[in-house]
Amino acid sequence: MAGSSGPDLEFHGGAAASAIPLGVFVLWAVVQSGLFGIGDTTGLVIGMLVALVVGLFFAKGDWSAYANAIFEGMTQRVAATAIVAWLWAGMFAQLLQDGGFVTGLVWVAQSLPVSQATLLAILPAVTFILAALLATGIGTGYGTAVTFVTTFFPATVLLGANPVLMFGAILSGAAFGDNLAPVSDTTIVSAVTQDADIGGVVASRFKYAVTAAALAFVAYLIAGATMTTGAGNGALPDGNPVGLVHLVSMGVVIYTAVRGRHIVEAITWGILTAIVANLVLGLESLNGMLSFVAPANAPFAEAFTWLPVLSMAGPDTAAGVGGSLYVGASGFFPLIVLTLLIVAGARIMIRGGAFDAIQDFLLSTAATSVRRAETTLVLGTALVNAAITINTAAEIAISPYVARVGESFNINGYRRANILDANTSALGYIFPWAGGVLAGYSQMPALVEQYGPEMIVSPVNVVPFVFHGWFLFAVFLVAALTGFGLEYVPDRESEEVSRV
Image (cartoon, rainbow, N blue to C red; front, side, top):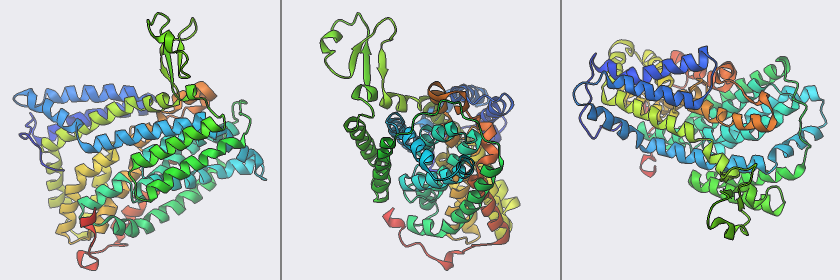
C-alpha cells in the first residue's frame, strides 16, 4: 500500500501492537459468530469500534495521530468502491425480488419435467453455476450474493432445498466471479499491484478457477443428493412466468459490464430496465418502488398527495420513506459502516509497522526456496484475509509483500497476481465475518418477514459448504507445493500494464 501521509504510528509493545485492533475484532467475531451463533452485522460494528478503542490505549504519544489514521483508512478509495457497488446492487436486487422474479423461478421449477427429489438434488449445483456466471459478468461477488440471496435463495428454500447448502452455493458462485471476472476490483488490484496486464492475468488463472469450479460442481451434486432437504414452510407462492422478464434486466447488467462499462453504469441500466418492466407489466407500482409517507400534521404535504409516491400517515402507518429502492440500499448500511472501520483498522496495522514486520520475518525465515516462498504467499494471503475481511482491502494490504517475495525469486507477475487474488477471493466468502458472507446474510432478515424463519442461515453453519472457496484455496496450495503452473519472469512478459 502506498505510504502514509502522516508520521508512522508507534505503540507500546512495538510494531506487533498495531495489530491489536484487528486482532480484537477477529476475536470478537469468533465469539459472536462462532461461540454464540449470532450473525448480526451491527454487532460486528460494535466489535470493531471496541477494537479501535482498545488499540488507542496502546498508541504512544499524541492520540491524534492514531485518530487521523482511522480517518485516513476510512477515506480510502478501496472502501468507497465496494460501498458504491453494494448500494447499486442492493437496489437492483430488491427491484427484482419485489418484481416477481422469485415467483418466476418457482414457475420454472414447477414446470420442469423432473421429480421433486431430482430437482432438489441438482438445485445447489445449478445455483452455483448461475451465480458464477452472474458474478463473472458484473464483476462483483458481493452484488451477486445480494442478488441471489434475495431471488434464488427464497425460491429454492420454499421448494424444499437445504438453506445452508443453497447459501454455500451462492457464495461459491460469487467467489468464482470475484476471482475470474475481468471487471472485478480484486482482479484489477491483483494485476496492477504485480505489474501484470488484466487480460493475461485472467487467461492465466482460468485453469485454476475452472479446476476448483469443476470439483465444487461435483461436490454440490453429491451434497444435494445426500443432505437432508428442508420441507419448505407450506407458503410456496404461485408460480408466475411473467417475473422471468427480469432475466432481461440481469442480461442488461451482464452485457453492459462485459462491454467494459463501469459497474455503476452497468447496474444503473439494469435498475432502469427493471423499473420499466415492473411498471409496464404491472409487477410493482411506482409507489412500491419508492414511497413517501408524510406525518398527518405535515403542513404542506397534503397538497401533494396527488403524487403517486406520496401518502399521509394514518393510525396504522408510520411516517417515513420506503419502497424497493429504499429497502435495497438501506439493508447495506451496517455492512458499510463495518467496512469503513475494518479498513481503518488495517491502515493502523500498516502505519504501525506490523505488516512490514510480518513481511520481513517471513521473507527471512520461511521463504527460503521458490516452493516455500509460494507456499508462504498462499498461507500469508489467507492469514491477512482472515483479519481484513474485505477482500480488496486485504489484497492491497498484502500486495507489497507478495511483490517483494515474488520478485526476489523471479516469479512471474501473473503467478503472483493469481496467488494474491485466489486466496482473498476464496476466503472472502468463507469466514463468518467476511464481507461476502455478511453481504448475503444482511438480506436474510427481510426475507424472514416475507417467507418465514427458515430464510436465516447462520454464517458459521455455511463455512464448510462454500465448496468453490475451499477448493480454490486447495488448488493454489497444491500448486505452490508442487510447482504446478509456476512461471518465472522470463517465461512470459506483461505487455499491457500501461493500458490499465
